[in-house]
Length: 361
Image (cartoon, rainbow, N blue to C red; front, side, top):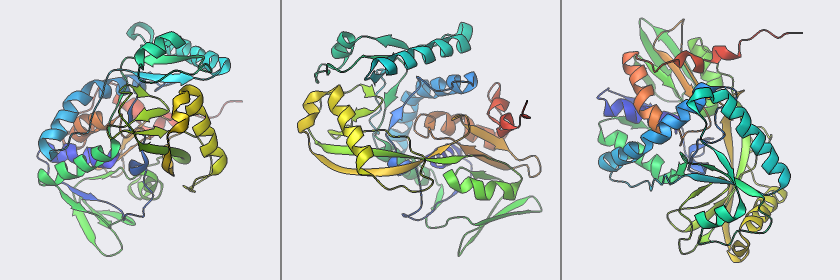
């Protein structure tokens, strides 16, 4: 989603742009995304990333309208705030502690997230009965959600409608730089351009060193369950139980250290389903229709990396796991950074150089 959003923004700004993509079987997070535009909990340890996420959420309304105009696709953006359900006293206490830390970190800028009680949650989701096992929830007013597959389709269609050139089945395996021109090679083709953006998920670890950049990321699996379609009952974004605009519920999310294995496992899916039923007991009778595993792209601090190569200026990396949330800022600010060199305030804090800190005894 990172690459498609940046490419879309460049094409919208009138920059001649080529987008290279892998085949349908390529490992990609964009097609397994949960669809949240999520701000609460983002940026613990890096306030600039918390601010960046909130700015993107605020830009999303205009971004959704822009996609609708250019691609003719409504991505069903909802921005009425988001709830993260807490299913034990321990979860509640841990989240309360994180909120306190985030407020201290934000300082005078403030941190808009609060713990709410079960009866307040019930008022926010009147279409479902909140289970007795819900110990509370965290509410973030800046959160929302979209249909992620419609978003991906809109980015691709909008890109080509804006004269962008899209080449699927061209996974890049080598990059060189000669005479101010970058050459990207796939198995059967060769592409040249004065600038190149690496926003290719886990492919970055192989390609970034070719342009003099270090981009440390790691894989993490998350599993998602989807139910049959039922009459809409919940419009609000929920952190692990989301009803789509098409009527089905999505249940998630797991955090598994399994390398690049994107399979599914019964113990994890059973736990995800049990938590959903504990939160909303009436979902017990809704049929599951499919599930999948997807590999997240995680940086060491779970915050975004944006870098330009010092040895090969004109080569950029852009990566993080929050491709939906950050879609609006990537299409607006990151595309402008690539095309003009203009950067938002304190943009250097997103450099991977933040990880180059000598170990202390």
